[in-house]
Structures are given as structure tokens and as C-alpha cells.
Image 1: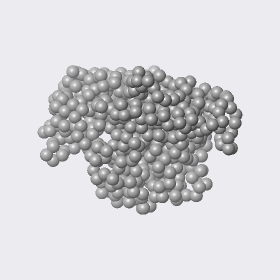
Image 2 (image 1 turned 30 degrees about the vertical axis):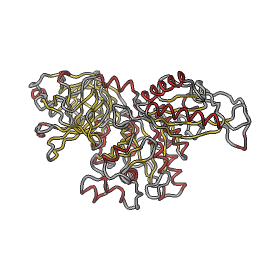
Image 3 (image 1 turned 90 degrees about the horizontal axis):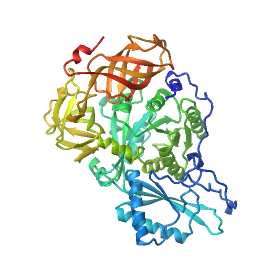
Image 4 (image 1 turned 180 degrees about the vertical axis):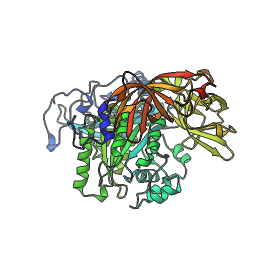
Length: 602
């Protein structure tokens, strides 16, 4: 991580500071742009019929891996060819974890040839037969005219193929929602999930609050979860046409789980916990059009960069501002995103075509950052965000998922509940392996470093029953009559065969993002590693006596209260007041059960 991210935390970066890196992406034509790294071929026919803008002649060459497939045409294939095409579709769906994108009228090298209307109709008919064969649905995303050595109009068509994998109930994508207090985070989620526009006084957000003081103040202080579904045809499924979360899950083939985080600086520790423990696939950074980058916006941006969470930006409340104010806010965002500490390429989304391109480029390149401008009151451009979320593919590939599933079970405990007639329930994320109903696991570490046996009685995902939980999925597990007093946030439930190790002392390679003076031995910070959140003291700074802002070092920490389960290589973030730092765990000093009490504190 570039140490210049520290500027986002220290407030020493001006919105206009730093050289511009790259340029703002605009709509560059069908299905992609030269910004994706594709070759820039010259147009073979320079004609410009009817004054229309010429499209780029190339897409990036087709990749063997991934979920994007190019097909010149699919007209009357033989039976053998058809079976081969079906096998190919299964592979692309597997690579996209249930989603694939077909570009019809494009050669394998990315050349946009296009098809006449009759050939395109026949190709789409064949594609529909292929999808029926594998049990998938297809949706035409967009069509584009291209010029390629012909006076007749020729088109390319982009098609989304979606099939819920046989071993899953639905495709799942977790989106953390960041932004300054009063920027409209909860209101936007209320509009998306309830299906009704806000009245301008916060009515849409009322169903999202969990506490009375949140309703009274209008400010989120805890972490809440909201769901938005899309069916196999790309249509929105939310509470406007479904009464319960179970109905939404049953009707959806793709689920977006929004993690609504707090915007006020007083609740920054809760926001950091949500980012580190719930493992979001990406983040939505909300910026109010009338205030611009203010308050904790810059800090939340720095957190996303530090934890390497891909993010896109939504500029809200455009109905309250003049067009020039909105444009000024967008320009301010573009300047900040291009700074050396961010090194992003902003892409302003102004049309449905832009939204499709943004979703694909966002998944392919970590540097592309789409920017949406919308209103939760008037509904302006709200549909563009829905198109983006519908098309946005999983950001982890199938190989990574399979490798995680082959490992032993490890479930992070983030929430603990007591449910009448059910007993103790824990919520969290399965970071590796597979968890089934009836599995015997061990949970810990306790204060004395022990792990306790328990049994998983039942599993629920998005409030609906689930028999099998796979790596990367979030769920709640019912533990029956297991004593809740023995549990705490930050514990892990693991397979007994794992023989888990715990530690009170660990070393980490860190970058001090911001500190007002010097960072020395004896300094106490709150350490976040995954779902672990505990105060630790700096025991030693290797090869140095002290650290200043922007400097790197290997530091030894000691937990003050109880031992924790840590793994070498895990991302680490620590804070104390305005002090911020990031890094990764390089070494843990494992201790045996029963020895923990002797290793805590100074």
C-alpha cells in the first residue's frame, strides 16, 4: 500500500492536490473501451453514416479465463457444434459463478464485425437454446451498430446469461455503504430495498434503524443489513412486491446484501469493524452533492484503499442543488480519485450504456471507479445504479472459491443473539471450508485460551433456511442450548482437525498512516484483524526507536485483555484517536491452552 494513502487520514491532502493520473472515462462504445487494455486498431472503413459517432473497432482480445465469451455468429450449428457450445457456456458460467456475458458479432481477437439483422436473430435464437439446455436465462443488455466494410447496417449484441449454481440458492454480493454523516446512506438503501421514493424528510430510512436513538437523531450508530434481489431476467425484487425476506430470496437469482455502516466520526470503530469483519466484495461511497467531500468522507475513502476494497461513488441529493453545484462536486471527486494516494480512473455514468460498461470495467480493473449522480427523492438516475448492481459480476473468481472450500472449516463470529425457542445464535462469515447442519465444531479462544465443543443445529442465510454454507458466504448459525455467556465477538468456530493456535503476542509489518507526534514503545492502539477488535500495546519497534507519519517498520504488539486467533498474512488496521496505521501480520507467538492468562498485559 502506498504510504501516500496517509494523506487521506491526516487531512493534509487538498482536493485539488496531486498530479492527475489518467483521465475520466466516458462512454466509449459497445461492451468495453480501450481503457481495458485492448489493442487500438485502425478503422477499416472511415464512413460515418448519418453523422453518428464511430465506435472503436476492437474490444480487448477474448481471455480463456473469465466469464466473457465472444462469438462472431451462432447460425444453425450442427448437433456436435451445439453440444460444444453448451459445454463452453457451462465453463463461462462456472468462471462467473453463475453469470456470463456473450458478445455476439465479435471475433476472438476483439474485432467488432457485427451481424446483419437476420443473422443476429438466428444467433440469439441459438443462444436461447443453449441457455435452456443448461437451465439459464438470457437478457439482452444492449445493441450497437458498427461500421465494418458494409453499406448495410450491422450490429453487435451484448447478452447476460444467468444461472444460479446447483449448489446455491442464489448469487450473492456484499456491498458496504460508506460516507459522511447525513449524506443519505440509509435513505438510499431504504429507497432501493423498499421500492418507494423518500419524501425529503427521511421516511425511507425509518425501516433500517435498529435503535430508538437512531430514529430520534436520524443517524446510524450500528451495523444493519438490507437485501435487494434481481431475478433471472434482471428485474428488481424488493419489499414493494414481497412481504418478507424469505419471499425475496425465493424469487431472486441474485442477491445484493448492503452493509449499512455509520457515518459519524464517533462511531468510526463500528465502521472499521464492519469493513474488516464482514468481508464486503466492494463498497459504495456516498457523497452529498451539496456538501461535497466533507467530514469522514475522506477517512472512509482511505479505509477502503487501505483494506483494498474496490469501491464506486454515488453523489446523492442532486435534487437540492443546481447543476453547476453537482458538476463542481463531481470535479472535486475526480481530482481526489486521481491523486497519487488513490490512483483511480473516474468514470462518470450518465446513461444505461455507461452503467453496463462501468459494471464490466469495474470487475476487470481495480483502478476504474464509476461515479453515479442521483436523487432518492425524485428518483433521478436511480435506475442506472440498479442496472449497475444487476450486471456487476462476482469480484472473486471460481478458482479462489474452490481453493477456499477445500480448506478446513473456519467461521468468524461477528454477532451473538438469543432467540426464543431457538437458543443461542451467532452471525458471521465462513472464511474457509464448508459448514453443514449437524457439524461438530470448536469455538474459541476463551479467556484462558481454550476451545469449546459445540454443534451447528441449523443455518440461515438472508433470513431463509439453508442446509450448506460455503466459503465466503455470510449466515447465522443456531447453536441450541450452548451458553451465550461463553461467547464473544472476535471468536472463531473451526473444525476440530484444524488444531487452532492462539496468541497474545504477534508481529506485524505496518505503515503509520497518520500520527500527530512520534509512535513509540508503550503506545496503546485498538487493533482490527478480521473480526478481531482489541486493545494492544506496542512492545517493540524493530530497528527503530520511533516512527513518524508515512514510515514503515516491523512492530511487536501484545493484546491487553485475552488471546486471539490470528493467521500470518492477515490484514491489520490499528487506530487511536487521530492515529491510524495499516499492515499485515508477519508472525504470531503461539501459546498453549491454559497459559493465556500469564501472557496478557504488560
